Length: 511
Image (spheres, rainbow, N blue to C red):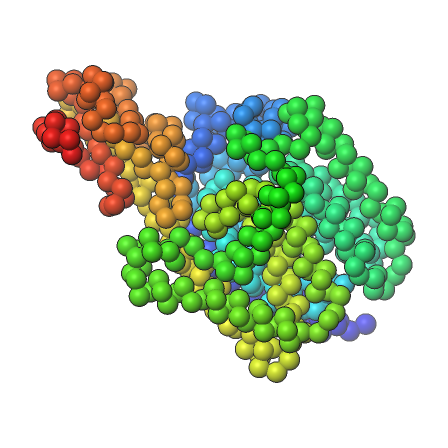
């Protein structure tokens, strides 16, 4: 039997999606470790020499990385970090390449879901996957190595859904078992994967089966193992962490607060429709200039206008409310957090999985539209997404350069003849939303040590995040102790050498 046009185009479409994704995110290869990344390396092996595999594998029967502050159970994330460290060592390019590949694979999974029943359109799949590959809210998930939590969870969750669609279309035990296994791995990656059974239930409620064969099991029977697996997961979480549903660390956010969830839902669609970043605020003038910022600031509004026109021009097929509901379902576990921090500059990685369903929605609307909307809507949205992605990626690219430069400068200063200590004064924390060393620079002392920085054994690395006069007033440093002082210049985003005379003069005059 000759192959269908859909099957003949699939390799070409997947190649285009993969190439577009890898090309768009290629600058991440020049990134560096940031904030929590340094802590993760330390937890993988406190001696920072090689992977401590017993410690890594202990995450399968303990809390996440042994951190009792967070009620997490994420063994797949720690396992991926151990594999990365064993493959690439302590170089940053390797783990960033892993993130790039995971993101590209997720784009292929979005295509696979859209190109199968019930949506069953290669055009929808190609549009949705390209929009997902170029989504402006993804830099935190891809550029920041710890954002891999979202990438791996989404990969297994989307794979579980795709394999279930294959099962309902063609029947067969293997896709069904593969879907259950993928769901289990998604649960071991991040808690938000609990939405998979809800998404599959939503599929059965909204869309009739349209495959070539009748599934061996009725919907209720085929969904029951997913809910049983979910119950077992909640029981395991309770046994390991003491919580059935955890909170986001010390934030104390109730994930099921009705008010916060409704507020977070509004902010979810606002940020998906207007995916601006910190460089599109007045603070971004220092990087891209006022005129460029104002011009680029029009892109989210133009994108929203195109989506609105598409929605009005589209037909009333059931796939539209299905994709709309799927967006909400994917975001349900994080809506409270989005309500507390609604800006896309903070926790924008939480939009990663919901954006997959949103891109499906846009693809369906474009496919159902007519006339010039169908002809020009896709290229306009892709161009807008690519432009905003380039802008929103700038802080993360520059943050990697800043972090690398800071650590190199600390290492060079520690090698100076006669130095006994290097004191860093100030908070190298954020760069336009990209986290350098965390609030109050908590990760800087962790990073300023081997293998990231080579420091002579006789030299101490000190960090004081507050007022530069405080260490002098408290007697922490003295003129004759051969302490080299580096002060963080927030405006210039760099460390500046500070002499003892300059420090005492500035502090005595109150500057």
